[in-house]
Image (cartoon, rainbow, N blue to C red; front, side, top):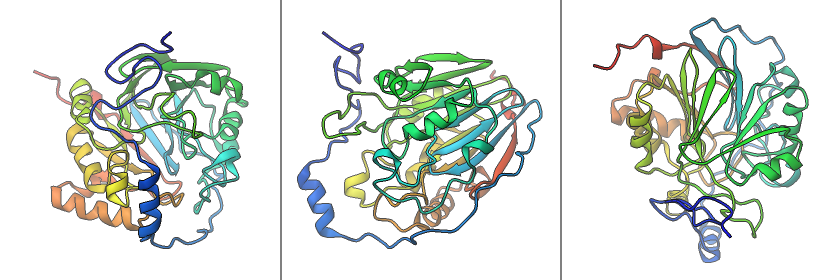
Length: 329
């Protein structure tokens, strides 16, 4: 009996990518280990989390606070959501094993406002930590929005309101319409559950602004399709790190040049970089994604102001240009 709807990305029990495989064998892992090439990272970049009050958000604007890795706080004047909240010291089991956090979260959970929605892109440890999730839902009535297959796991770990979405399905939280959109990735928390749950990005539409959170993804034709379905995106949160060695990572993680191509495909008013400089997951150095993004922007003729890298903990407030653009003919 099928556990999930059969589709172009699901056989009823497991999920897959329509545009390419992300499977990697033990032989591939051994080759990566043998070849080496990982650049050194600092053990820790000391910094105290910011506990000061967040700046307010006027009607018609949207504010983004970069907490680290793929964790962004997104606020309008009446709505707040957080993406892939990870506040643990490690990106592994129980938040105490696996890759160690080099930069601490720029804000603590108790320094956040009340959260209306938690957006989870997939179940990897650097994107889903039950301890972080519990800390958020215990102090708010947040709706946890997740891809198919994660509901039981999330409820077991404290989530009271969970909505599971397939690609292109939507839900509503307060005034925000949240749509799960395709990504090219995979899921697993153990050796036995690979691709038993889905992965996705999200488009959040509010009266003030439209925001696209890419999640984790390799490059695929889906980005042009997303841009066509949502032609007025104010801001896109786009991954730029965890991409080396390229022969291994290409199907599942974009590099900075491909991140710029996502920006060109979707045509947001501004893109903000994420998924870099927090956990040492792959071979590139801690600062390489930002330098490579600078080069990729220049080669593609993209204004640096149109694809920005925020400082740790920085909050940027953007006008909701979606409502200011000239209407489609």
